Length: 184
Image (cartoon, rainbow, N blue to C red; front, side):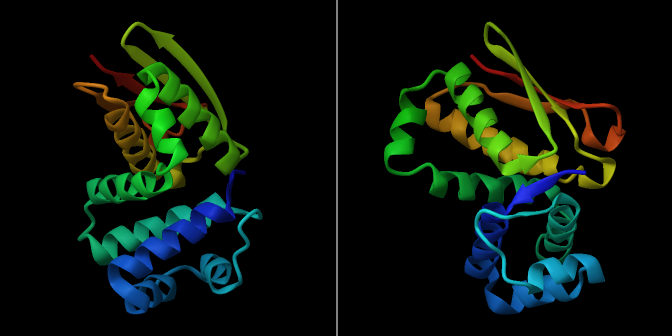
């Protein structure tokens, strides 16, 4: 079973508040299952672990309620969060890094945000494959969050003609999912 760090939940709640206010946040939380609602109605601690299923359900409801079900909007929203996170000193590292460096660094950061998810990187010139072990089918919305994260970081690094797609989707429910990235 996969978990996610409280920081991610807190950043997401802050983004929803900024975008739609307490009214949108309340509407989303009220639409959650009892189990997930308990997570979001309790105090969320920055460094604690929370069920990834609850976070995935929150994202599903958010997209349904505030983006007419458009999951690509979630990727765009993730890009905004990443842009805010990669400011100051971190922005310099992203801008100065090669796409390979950025992908390696972002993957390492993802490993600190997820517990129960293993990440394996494979590189070739101008492409990378990232295998994620540990996501379950109900967490397939995470594909859009991950794509938005990498898309923004690679754009900030100066990579051109970036293509990102899940060659093995999380929804496929296999032993792993696989993100394929290419650039020029």
